[in-house]
Length: 296
Image (cartoon, rainbow, N blue to C red; front, side, top):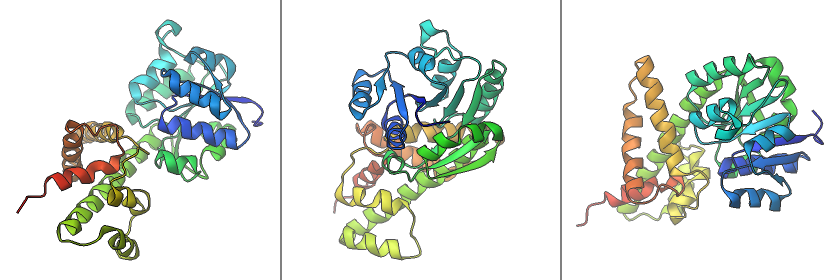
């Protein structure tokens, strides 16, 4: 596909806006929609075309990127009537779903929409909005390989790396496993930093030592200084992390796999949200660990 063709983006939150930036930077024309008018205005200020409905995006674009919150919203966009917010897509259109979704439902959805002639590719992304905007996200692709080839120019614009995992649903399963490790990496770092802080250590120099030690994880690059400086400007909302971890537990229950560490993480996150921190960056979990520091 030539970059001159308009590519759609539905969902202009942190991730959707980062994806629109990637496409615009690569020379694509972008038409986008979000229920929030300020997000549509932001797209227009970036140089994209702000649409007033998902249907309008569908009418303009052959390839559409979905970056909405959850599986319910993906299903509604692809299967609901226009009057209920559906995009009214038809034969020969191609959908790239970047949302973190229930992999079993995505597998079933792909089969249903493909019967209508719609090409469907799931491509959940590993990386926060800042990483994705810089081109450092990783796309985890599930679906038909031929569809992936058709979407190659868009995928290459969105992420420098993409991996084919297998049929639809495979990308989502990989994303849940990766997000589990990522969330626990953040929590472990937060607990280690809170512990060090309680012992009187300076966190900024300690973080640099940790990065050079055997405990290094990429979370230290992306979240370490946010925890050290208590800068929780969102690159990924904490509520999104909770949604993903609850989805992990739903899938785990189906297959009979216990997730004891993920359960502990959910408890930390739910406590943060109870303290009004849900719309902050997911690195804010360190605040809950600080709150658990006993006063001597």
